[in-house]
Length: 402
Image 1 (tube, rainbow, N blue to C red):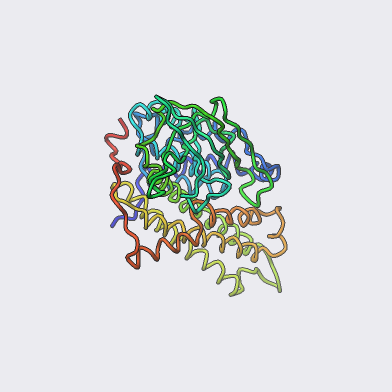
Image 2: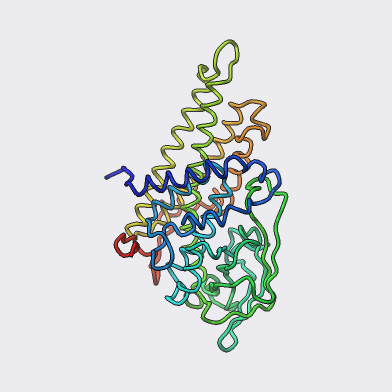
């Protein structure tokens, strides 16, 4: 087993690291305080090819592999979670869903401009009354001739007011014997008549990111905008979550690293009782725990990236990586504040923001409790992955880079 990163992987790391450290880190605190997304973020990520990093060149992407996506997400979240959220939503939950389930026409119409950063994608699953309980979705889609008419509201939608396209899950068959089979996925252009959306402010964390709501009132879309077949919406949503959770795991790993770097730097500078606090064993214990968490989280997400490259189903492994990394990042952020003492309780230091940001990741894209149930289900034999009509394509460098 080869744990070494390729030259291309290291180039991706350095490119993303240089971008976030030079262009975002100096200003992120002011945008977090203002609860606004920096206006240059999405255009700049598009220019650098980050928004299409692991999509085939033929669809406007950079032709890199899935590990490259994880490495990019780690570097983005070292500076701020809001940057990684862009990748989770635009890439993991939307673009990769089109790559897996879309027709050639849909890939050209929706995926290519998203990969080039000309258009931004978001994901419409969560509703005011439906979060972890996906089958409680109330949004509806009614077929009439060669179009669908959509109604419903989605909440806690990242990039809601920034996106051009939304991968929207709605109920097409309220009478389905199996409620899971009554859901269907669609690609919705958000400039259509009947679309309303707005931002949500007052969040605990990820304040420099865009979060909002989207409402559809008798929105007409072509039948050609349906993603997959009728009744496949639940399966499509779950595969999109596999991809999104991978990016969350990689990003949370970056947050652990950020906490570790900030804590070691402060511990070596801060003096108490006549010496640097880094000399005290209790501080060393906290630092060592961060090292342990970072190394384990990194291995877990890299394994998932490798599995995706091979075209292997990775629902269990992705769930474990997301669960471990997000819980560990919240613990690391809490300990980082403890190391910083009173200064850590102020936004003068970044660790205060890290803790607020880390809390969201143990909730979205499957709460820690949901992932505990998933892992128990696999271990006890209650859960197994049913075959899909189409899997996420394995990475083929020769084909993807043409």
